[in-house]
Length: 481
Image (cartoon, rainbow, N blue to C red; front, side):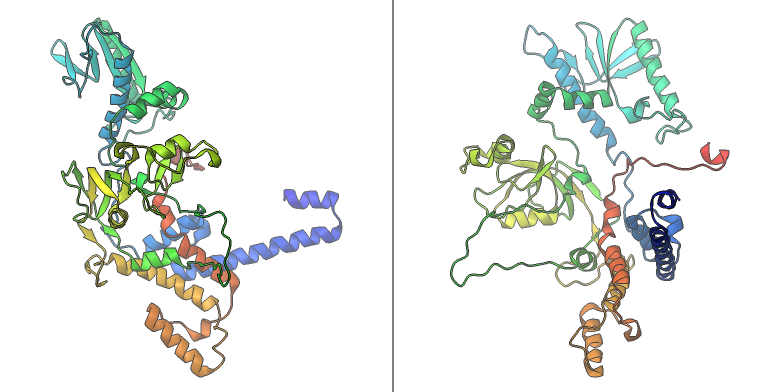
């Protein structure tokens, strides 16, 4: 309406008609798209979905996904307490560094140093994160999620998932009551909230440098193995020789092909901490490890993040030192030791096996998420889990939209006779396992673009961050409360 009102005041009558025609055309296109999508997937995406990725995900769940296939990871992870534990440990080490000591012995007792202390209060006792007996100082690291941080969780009436029948306000008040009681008992309590500690790490370089120096490895986080594509230019300039030609190769339908042909893990993983081996061939899934790259490799295998940048280094320290330097100032030779060159990160077992083939050496494995079942065998491509049928259901989704895409592409130019068209249909069925409908084979760029989008956008929803803000419009009080 705003656009049309503006047009009535400032544009000619012909321009207004053009705007109205465009709106009607867009409306008709949306209605046609809505009908076609409902015929294929069985639901109204305009009513149920906002983005194309959410439409892909809902279509898969409603039509092709079977039970007990994809693990639903708890919001804070399978070992969420370990994540908070490592953050608290870093803070305690930082506080220890600030203390003056007459000897080399640490003063703050915590889980990694003489154990956590239980402080008596009559018949009760309080378990504290850290305790300095010399000054009767208690150190408490308050995880925002577990202790109901007012900054991170402003909705105080929100039900806490891990404290039955308690809200965020309730758990925060319990935390405050504990701190006040410890103060009443004569202890000096020093608190650090998780969000405040995260801000300090980001804004105070000396704390960040200290954290980097500490040799504390956090638990495996599957998102750390989720990298973007490799888009860098390997060679910036090349002068062709006589008879030499530069070619451009385009990999088509990469995501659909991976979803159709490659293995997928099934069910929940088995978490293995400190397995005591460097052999990844016995596992299938994710591995957090320390690995030494080879000295010379034109195309490094493993991705690595440094300062939010995705790189493929052969030496960690070289990248850290030269990342901010101009290209002309970077050294061609690496002077660093194997310990300085090595990478610590999380990768899939398939990536690590390829890296080992190219000369990488795993020096230590910290944790493994091993999936005992996968969709099919690697070598002979025989379906392994017929009772679950994961590969069958994924392929059915892919084949549904591949069929639409191929039909909307029209007949190939060389298919100018009935015999050639029949041969084309048979060859496509033999190669892809999809029976095309000759009646529906007609060029339709819009429908082809939709099918291609459904094929390429399918997997992305599984990688969405779980902490995205959502806005809901409430029409009734019961929806709000």
